Each structure stands twice: as structure tokens, then as C-alpha cells.
Image (cartoon, rainbow, N blue to C red; front, top):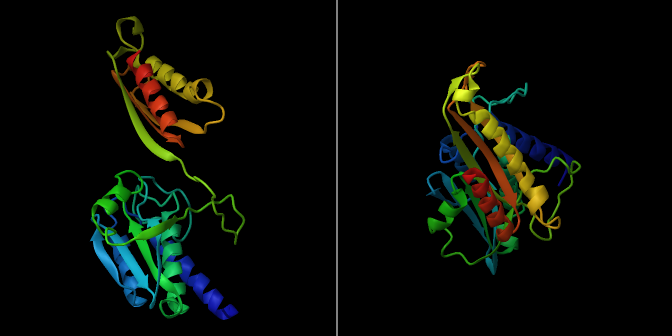
Length: 280
């Protein structure tokens, strides 16, 4: 590829990623995101199936010569987060942001499609390549919905390549994992219910704030105190909501967070231990 072509291609990728970043959409609401993807696929002359699992897209390139069927998968949805970055391509949708890199993932996938088209892969390559644009990765079981749709049933896919942005890698480098690279993710929500009261009279109320703090402390001890040091696991509390006034004891508190594990046995142990903590 000539230098001028490389520059043009890089500019195209950057503009594409920034477009997705400016207009983020939540899971199963990726209407305009999906539309943009389909517009580009149409411009490149690449056939696709839509809708899949409501807003998903499956595109494909088939070579003249027979060969293996492989797939690239990318996610499409954003997160319910207010963007604080002061950049020209800042999110235009209040309270929604591409904070997990899915804007970059979509740009990468479409970049692969464009490059294969420009290299005339369908004439020179072998087999078939699918491009899976999946909705609702951030909760909502988008991957399961894509499989349940039947869009891949007739495809004997030998391998699916997923990718994720990693700011820990130097610019221009791509990392490949020999084994499992990303943990299974579970979300949890714990509601602590008691009797509210005045802050000056805690003895006649049930202090859910104190109980909540105890639950959080014990939850954070699960990995360090009951998981084998050779097993990787994470339990993180990311949200705590209780009360609205400094002198009033609330009657309810809500704790929410995430669990990350690599083995089902560890996953089940953490879940069971959290249930024990909550049951007292």
C-alpha cells in the first residue's frame, strides 16, 4: 500500500470511530449505529443479513475457492455514562458514552472488511468470512440472541475472532491471547432493607448504612480470603445508593457491582458466598 493510501485509510478509520463515538446507543437501541454499519457495507458492495437479534448485522465475504469459514465479531452498544472528555467528537447523547471501546471495535471490523475488498480477497482467497456486529454486549445477552436467531446455523464456522482495545499495548501493536483472555462477567445487585429514622435517634431505627458497609467489606474479602491464590477473580462494587439527607437514616440501600471469573467453580463459589453474606 502506498503511503498516501495508508494515510487515507487511517483517516477514514479515525473518522469512522469518532462518528460512532459521537452517537452512542444502548443495547438493543443501536438503530443509527446499525444503519451506519449497513451504509458502509452497501458502499463496499458487501452483502449482509439484517435485522439479527433486533439491531444486529451479519455480513459475509465468500471467495471463489472453497475453504474454511471464519468470523470476526464486534460489539455495538455503549454504556449509560455521562462523558466528561472535552473533545470535538464528544458524545452527543446525554448520559450515554462509548466508554468500553465498542466504537473502536466497529471501526476495526469495518476496516478489515474494506481492506479485504480492496485486496480482492473474494477472487484470491479461500472459504468464507463472516462479520458479526452484535448488539447488547453490556448486559442483555446479545451474543446468545445472535445465536438463537439462527443466522449462523447454516454456517460451519471453524473459528470466531473477537477483539478488544487495549491501551496497555503500544501504538501499532496487536496482542494475541493463546488461551482465555477475558473473564466471564456477572452483575449483581443487593438491596438492604431496614427501618428508617432520624439520625439523632439511631437506637430506634435499623441502620441500613452500617449494614451496607459491612456487606461491602465482607464481599471484598471473598477473593482474598476464600479463593485459591492460583485462581483469578475480581469482585467490585461500583454503585451504592442510599438516603437523601445527612440527618435521616434511610430505610433502604442498594449495592451494585460486577464479578469476573475464569472458571465455573470459582464463579459458583463467589455467588454462593455472596448469598451467605446477604442471608446473615
